[in-house]
Length: 92
Image (cartoon, rainbow, N blue to C red):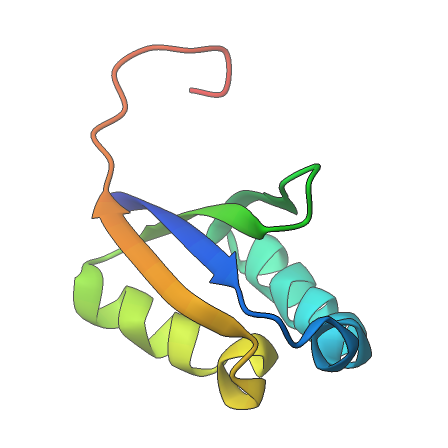
């Protein structure tokens, strides 16, 4: 399994993002139940969000991201993906 840190950078379409947020959060809840999403949440300044996934590989991650309602709505102007090699920490 691989871990990925994914950063969403929100666009200026706040109203649209807030409208689709319930569906986005419902989708994320299904990923938590499956053990795919480890942690997620928006930045306090509401400019974006950080999500940490555990999947087989980047191809699976891309499928997960593609199915997210935020992706369909185009509310993130940028999605930054980094494979994350976790070493130590309470979450591990």
